[in-house]
Length: 398
Image 1 (tube, rainbow, N blue to C red):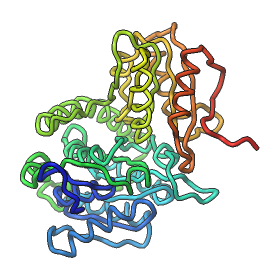
Image 2 (spheres, one colour):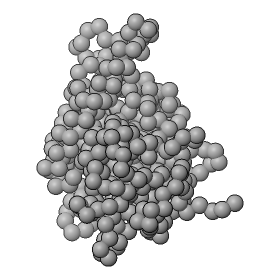
Image 3 (cartoon, rainbow, N blue to C red):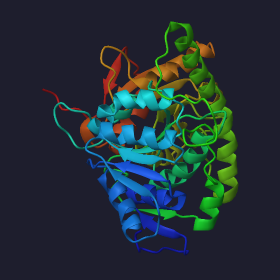
Image 4 (spheres, rainbow, N blue to C red):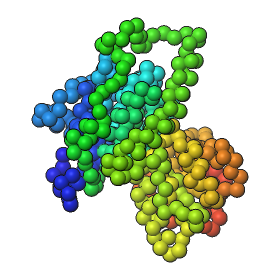
C-alpha cells in the first residue's frame, strides 16, 4: 500500500491498480489465478506482495495464459473458494470461451479489468473495446471513474456476485493508465469494517461441499439448454434489486453514493447532457462546472452499471432533458456504439419522441479527451448542430 498519507489515517494516495489490490487484500479471497498483462499487472503485483509478506493466506496460481487463468478460476469457484482475478485487453479476449462457461455455471467470480485497446494494431493504452467486446458473455459489468470507485466497487461486487438469487460473475472496470497508474486520494475502510461488509463466503453449491448430485460442465441438449439461459436472464433481473440494496448498505458505511447512474449538476433547468462512463466523466464534470458558472444549462450522467443496464433509472433522469450526447470509447463496427445504443433503447422504451441525440466516439487507443473537445460537444447541442450518424472527437484528418 502507498505511504502517502492525507488528512486522516484512512485516507491515502493510491493508483487505481493499488486500490483494487488493497480491496482484494481486505477481502482475502481463497484463490487468485494470475497472468501479467499491461496495464493490469500492478494489480496482481501489489496483491502478490501482500501474500509474499504473509499478510494474506490467498492461494495465488500463476497460470500459463489468461485462458488458463479463467479455467483455474472456474475450478476454484466450483470447488468452493471465493475467487478473484484481473486482466486487460487481449488477455480478456483470450478468456472469451471461459467467460461464458463461468457465467453459465453461475460462479460468483470477481475480476478487475484495466481497460485497454484490442489489437490490431498493437496498442497498450485505454479504450473500452475489450470489455464491450464481451458485454454479452453473462457477466455483470461495473465501470469506475476513479481509484475510490475501484476500491469501493470491489467490496460491493463480491457481495453482489455471491447473493444466492444472483450467483453471477462480475467485472469491475477501470481505465488503463488513466486510472490504473495515477495516484488519487482514496479513503480506505478499516480491515474489520471491510471484512464485516463483505462477510464470509457463502456460495452453497460447490463440488466439495455436502450437497449431493451436483454436476458442472455437463452436456445439455435442446430439451434443457434454453431454460438454463432463461434462468441466467432472470438472475440478471434479480441482480438489479440486489445491487440497489448493497449500494445503500455500503453508502451507509462510507457516505458515498453508488447508484447505477450518477447525476452531476442536473436540475429542472438542465437542457443538455453528456452521457458517458469511467474516467472521462471526471473531465466532463470540470467543463460542466465552468459552463454552468456562466448561467449554462448543462449536466452529466455517468453510467456505472452497464450490465444489467439501468433503463428505468436512466429514463427517469432524462425525461425532461431535450438534448443528449453520448460519448463511447469504442466502436461497434457496422452499427452504433454500445452505450449510445443502450441510451436509444431507453428512449424507445419510454416512448420519448421529442429528444435530440447524437453519438460521439472518443479516446480510442488512449487518445486524450480534452476540455475543448467536451466544450465542442456542448456547443453542438446548444447550437442544434446534430447530424445523422456518429461524430468523432479529436481525430486527425488523413
